[in-house]
Amino acid sequence: MDVEPTGSLIALLRQAVLDGQAPAAAAATERALAAGIPPRTLVDDALIPAMDEAGRLFEGGEYFVPELLIAARALKASQALITPLLAGSAVTAAGRVAIGTVKGDMHDIGKNLVVALLQGGGFDVIDLGADVPPERFVAAVRDDRADIIGLSALLTTTMLQMKATVQALAQAGVRDSVKVMVGGAPVTQRFADEIGADGFADNAAAAVVLARRLMGRPA
Amino acid sequence: MTSRERVRTAMRRRQPDRPPFDLSFGFSTAQLERFRARTGADDPYDYFETDTRMVWPGPTRLATDYSRYLGPLPPGTVVDEWGLAHVPTSSAEGDHAHLEGFRHPMRGLASAADAAGYPLPDIDADYRYEPVRAEIADIHRRGLAAMAMLECTVFERAWYLRSMERLLLDFTDGSAFATTLLDRITERRVGQAQHYARCGADVIAYGDDVGTQRGMLMSVRMWRTWLKPRLARTIAAARDVSPDVLVFYHSDGDVTAIIPDLIEIGVDILNPVQPECMDPAALKRAYGDRLSFWGTIGTQSTFPFGSPDDVRREVRTRIDTVGAGGGLFLAPTHVIEPEVPFENIVAFVETVKGAGR
Image (tube, rainbow over all chains, first blue to last red):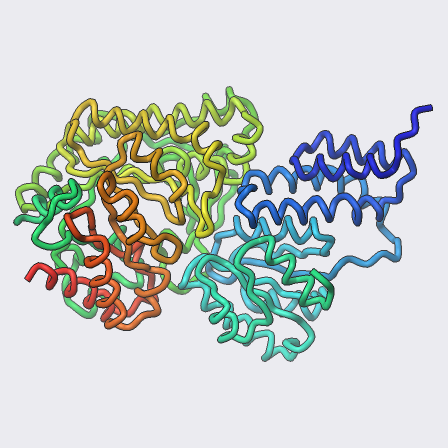
């Protein structure tokens, strides 16, 4: 019997996700599970490092949007096999993030990249979509117990809805139980400070680092 | 100097009396209403005496039914002649193009045969350019420059139909679907560009957003594989008809990485040179002998958030650092969004016009 070492199977999966090879990622996952590697180990040692590396390459200008999209597709192919095995286990996610593009704004490509990298980074992500009214974010904190709210906007016009959303969280009495992070082309650290957000990230990879920091974990 | 002479002189990188200007792609609905209430005038381009006027093909006679591609649509949705559904948002700021969503008709299609069978509009049909010819003649009679709009030339039109994520995955997978779709759109755009050139357009405004504010949306290699040859074909088609037509290329974001390629395929003018992520003065130093710059006044920064003095300062800085020897056309970098103070628009126009005195 040909027994592959655990390390090489994990490396294979990591590389398949990083390269955006969905069929190879699914095949590597099946082989790793058949070899008895715990699903949680595959998440921690293959999937999360692969998407972190994809994010770093994106930040460094080596990866572009298409490379992130195929990495996310390969991630999903692996997760489809792993996630059912994790259900009911005591393992907790890195944190729960409810994220959306703010009211009036339909631009969701940047937000979708953040979703993909957060999921890749082990976060439990509630994707609220685009044109999301402040009350929906409030409900995500109150009913879905989100740890972090992520707000995205592309336009200077709709960016002002971020302020309205932070205010709505305060009025609903849930502002202190959640962290708010903001991003999008017109958004700056100064604007984030002005509206009382807890953090700003200027790209999708930096958003994952920020979310970990807001959860009190090392980046 | 007439406006038309000013535009042609400056964009050929010779010194005009003052830089030409316009108001970019227009006002958002809320801004237009405010303009009309403030001035009593109807048309901001006439009121502010901009140097160019835009033209588009005349209306289509086709009435293609795209419902089988789109399914049920929310109330208020408008389906355009390409089959793209424009879905209203909850924004209270009026109904301009940046505040609407898309429903992509080709998102669910799979095969190259599906891409070949999708009904495209007759955007290149002869009859649609009869009104264009008349409009351009009228624009010229008024001493203005005619700018023929070929926006969303290939890539953006393709992703509007397919969805950006699906199209980029198609590129990555090297799919025949993407090849077929892009070739069919390019074919229509070739015809459209030739019509515009025959009608006497001074400027043809091509455009595909391929930049983000942190650099290219896709790798230069992917852009060269999928988009550069097709853009080159549509430019060459216009030049075959009118060798001296000015080729304007629009991409938001930072597209510094492809500037040499754009020059190589015949682009004369880069727009909008977003100052939030590109340095107009540095680009002038690097490419100012081969490329003109149109835009450069930030609608993401100075126009909405600056004072009238900030606007004046930015205009003067641009004239000092980019305007020498021509090659500068001043304009807001995009649509004037609802939150831009009216005083900032006035300050922009007055400063540009004052520069000639």
